[in-house]
Image (tube, rainbow, N blue to C red; front, side, top):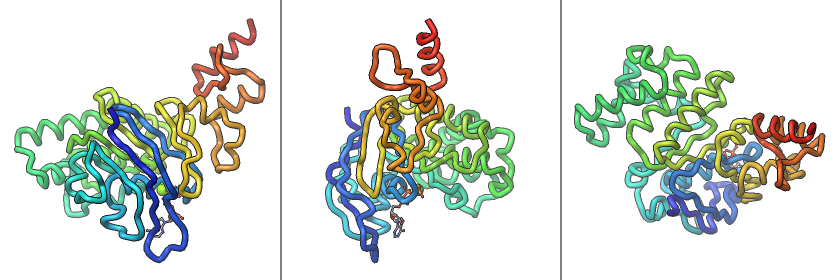
Length: 281
Ligand SMILES: Nc1ncnc2c1ncn2[C@@H]1O[C@H](COP(=O)(O)OP(=O)(O)OP(=O)(O)O)[C@@H](O)[C@H]1O
Ligand SMILES: [Mg+2]
C-alpha cells in the first residue's frame, strides 16, 4: 500500500525566480526507508517540507500537482492534520528545541501534551523513546547542555514519541561524529522494523546504501532517478549530480567487479567483500 504519493509536484518559493521542486512524481510504500540525495540546493529539504505541509501552508508561494500522505491531500488539509500522520526532524536540531523546557524529559513531553496524550501513556512513551535513543542518562539535563548528537537524538525522540506512521529526517546526522551517526541510523532502523515509513535526506552515501530500500536522486528540483541503492549508485554519471558513490562501490567499479549475477556494483562493505572473494576464486 502506498503511504506517500507525489504527482507532478511543482513549487516556487515567494520572490524566487526558479522552481525549487519541478514536476516531482514518486510513491513510497508503507514501511519503506527512502534516502533522498543530491547536491546542496537540489530540493531535498523543500520536498520534505512539502510532505509535512509546511509547503505550501507555511512558506506559501506557487504550488502545483499533488501530495497525498496516507490518503490525505496535503494542499487541502492543515499542517495539524498532517502532523498526526507524518513527523519531521529538521536539519538543525537547535531550531526544533522549544527553548521553554528545563529538561530533556519535559521537552519530549511537550509535544505529547499538545496532542492530549493521557498521563500514564505519556510516561510510557517517554521512557520508551529515552531508551530507544540512548538518552536516559541525560533526561534531567537542560536540552541546551546536550552534545550535538544527544540533541539530535532528543529531537528525533520527541517526534517518535508522537507515534507518527511516517517520519521525515532532514540530514539528521550532519552534526554527528561516526559513532553518533551510526547510533541514529540504528535507531531509525528499529523504527523501520516497527513498520514506520521513513524518508531521510542524507549526504553520507555509505549509510544510505546500507540502510535504505530505495534512493531518490534530485537535481535542480527534478527527480533524476528513483531506484534501489545498487542501481542508483552504479550509475557512472553521479558526479554530474554532485554525488559520490559509496567508497565500496567506487573500488569495485575501478576493478570492474559487479555483484554476482547482476549488472550492478556492490554498495556495502559486505557486498564488496563477497564480490571480491568471488573474483579471486
Ligand atoms: N525559505 C526559502 N526561500 C526561498 N528560497 C528557498 C528557501 N529555502 C530554500 N530555497 C531555495 O530552494 C532551492 C532548494 O533548496 P533546499 O533547501 O530544498 O535544498 P537542499 O537539497 O535541502 O540543500 P542542502 O543540501 O543544502 O540542505 C534552493 O535553490 C534554495 O535556494
Ligand atoms: Mg536541505
